[in-house]
Amino acid sequence: MADTMVRDAKPVVETDDDLALVERLKNSREMILRELRKVIVGQDDVIQLVLIALFAGGHALITGVPGLAKTLLIKTLADITRLKFGRIQFTPDLMPADVIGTEVLEEDPVTGRRQLKFVRGPIFANILLADEINRTPPKTQSALLEAMEEQQVTVGGVTYHMDAPFFVLATQNPIELEGTYPLPEAQLDRFMFKILIDYLPEAEEIAVVDSTTGTAAISAEPILHGSDIIDFQRLVRQVPVAQEVTRYAVRLTAASRPGNGTAPEAVKKWVSWGAGLRASQFLILGAKVRALLSGRYNVAYDDIRALAHPVMRHRIIVNFHAQAERIDTTHVIDRLLETIPVPASDI
Image 1 (cartoon, rainbow, N blue to C red):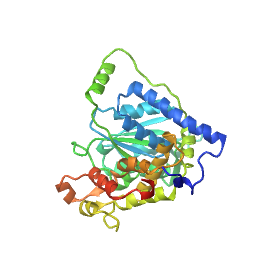
Image 2 (image 1 turned 30 degrees about the vertical axis):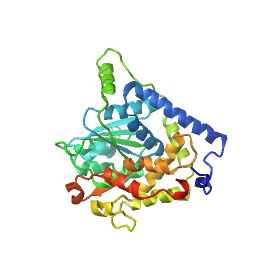
Image 3 (image 1 turned 60 degrees about the horizontal axis):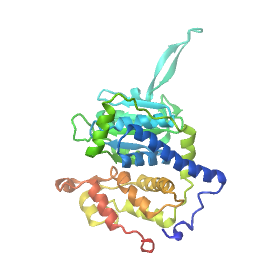
Image 4 (image 1 turned 60 degrees about the vertical axis):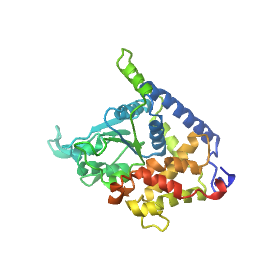
């Protein structure tokens, strides 16, 4: 990319400590990949997006049919990063208090006085696995909203803060499966990425069968602390972004809204609701991480384009015309990438 892309931004590496941190981030990624691959076969694109979300401080929603190692991936990541792990198995009868926690009446054995005590729920973790999140009604799903946005929960008028880092990795089954509920739009918008996980190629599936039906016990080694993740998230926000690149991300997002003057005809025809401001924010944050992991200290247009699908696919709602023509959000985003041009000076 041209040098003009970073003229109006501060350099990311201002001190020797920052330079060392950049190297530590890249090395940590390689170590995490090495440990994950001991347990997880294939799915490199999925793992890459999960790591980008982790280093950016975002949450991720992983969608796929049962049996594709969604839960195993998240549990292994928690083991590798030495973070406190919490798991919630979402079911139709799960209540918000089962997620957040509840107040119980306790009696002081010395004074005999009774008082309410808040018993924390499994949401108070560093990495929270919300397993099969769409198997519970929207009322319970919404119990995560405040924690995901503000890293806190409020019970009985008292606010309880989450320990940093706080990272929600949710899995869901395709909504066509029996016993699933669609996630509310406000809930979906809290997720940085919606990641699709698919069946493995034959050779990789054979490798999984061989490794899981033998006698060898495979486990990943812990290599990172929570403080490392916090340092990486701070570093990411120092990565410079040229105004032209930010403008491109914003224009791409705005063009997904059918009422916007820049929206292509395909969007006006097929979309009832486009992506909001968080899409632009997450495109830039994710692109910063991708740039660093690629060994660059500035964000390129290709970083934005590479993340358009996972950032926008759950933020665009297609209308009945699209459904009738079997047009999904993937097709709409493809059209956006074709229609909204990268500035000519940097092609």
